Length: 269
Ligand code: HPA
Image 1: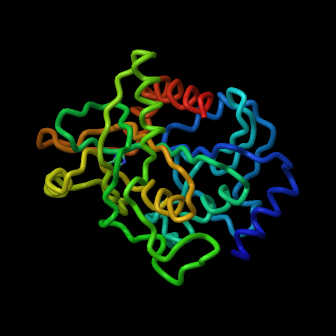
Image 2: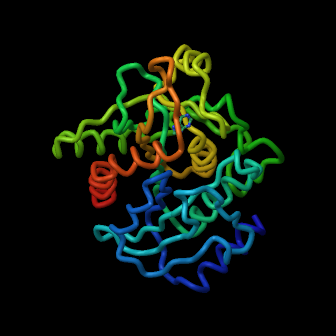
């Protein structure tokens, strides 16, 4: 809690507003920040105890401003276990956003499609997740001032937010999928056998982020909505090579629809 307070107080000394909505931008989705009337940008490196992102496609700053009448704070760049951070470090910013006052957390990511009907560029509303292939960020002594020892996970992704986005998508004629996101640590993409395992487990998409953030938010009672951009499909022919560049390119192409949905959701919150 002490570290969280130090980070929060530092940010408050630079920006006086209280954001309503926190947004985590996934790989290749950073240009979403063009939608924000920016009031203040704070590089992660300036904030006490914040990790610094090391991945291409993740720029590494908090962006405060207005979007469709709401005060928002966007994380341009997030932290992954594969970078070598502890799971506690990867979720530190989420705790800071909560104590800056956000009421809702919107999360995005680039993910591999596992459901055989998925195509590159599809948007998938995350309706549930499987976190068991990656470490749980709440392992360790529980800080009661953040949340309970044994958080309920029956509705990690709020149904009323999912419904809103489905309605918005229908109205705007945007095709959205819905599915289960399976978290892995990466940094390797999956083998053929691993994709088959994830499909057998009940996964529709697989990725290296998000669930730690979601668990942390649920622990603190913070409502979450999350969406994946399907940037590659795992189960395809034998010559299935996936590159980070391909992931970034696919995310960029899906960005207009992603932006339209997130902006309208924020307007309706
Ligand atoms: N697997 C895991 N993480 C990913 C993938 C994938 O295929 N695509 C984008 N992130």
